[in-house]
Length: 191
Image 1 (cartoon, rainbow, N blue to C red):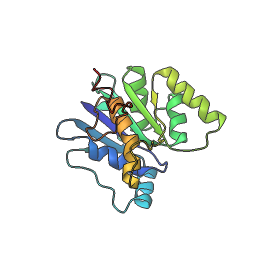
Image 2: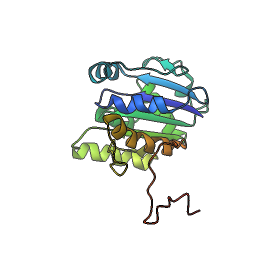
Image 3: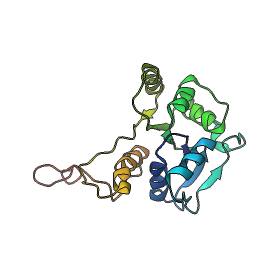
């Protein structure tokens, strides 16, 4: 797969870090683009933000990257974490940065665009922007963790969201918690 992973200045860099760690950059082409604010937040939230080997880092203002053109074939884009300001700009079709232009291209080309907002609460403006993106074909996957798996650490909690992102990309994790029925069978076991 060819993927674009983007990050904005919302809190939640752990989701980005855990996602990058769980995508095999030797098996997939992975481009990372971070806004300036995303880099500042990463420095505040994590002791050390690490870009795995093989992940190609791109500048947020570099419009000379392939994923900003509809003629370049990419499979998916994830914006994690996504601030409500960026979500609003994507919903408006703004394309003044490579991140925004790429999101616009993914929408117009009907490619998988996954937006992971972390901010709460939402205003009516936020909700309307989310509705606009849903109508345009984006997947809006709020960073809301689950606790079925009984996470034991902050990383485990973050992984419950990351597993959902990976599922949406078609890259399920073998570590992902899967719901079991009363007999202990997963959905896959019943097939």
